[in-house]
Length: 181
Image (tube, rainbow, N blue to C red; front, side, top):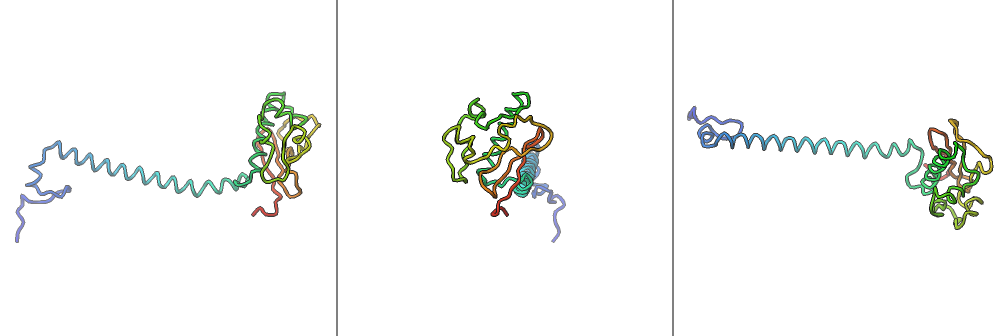
């Protein structure tokens, strides 16, 4: 059985006889729709690849920073370190003589910022901050300036805890926890 030469099929799946019934505008709309669908699929494919890549990369960057994401103490210490640097910037690069100065001068508004849920002590006053109920301020009374050198500034009030270092360039941690993988 021979096919009628006028009945050849094109990329739209329609034969030449059927294509004559479609206006040029409809043909353009079909091409536009197929291009939009293809663009939509490419966009969401790329978005999916980016999301998968981020889900694989972000956990490894947490390990590079050295701070375990679930550590309340590390988060609180980082926040305190941030305000120590801010204090130094506003006070001629000098760090406070007492850690409670951050609270007294309004850099940190709540005492809860100095109270870790992982440590047994409860910070309820400026004296508790200075006595190291949860965190020991390692440079208390030393009238130090912030510099390019890393200096141990804050530590958890326990033997195998975290120590925070500050320099002009970074805030970093040293973990000595036995349960840290």
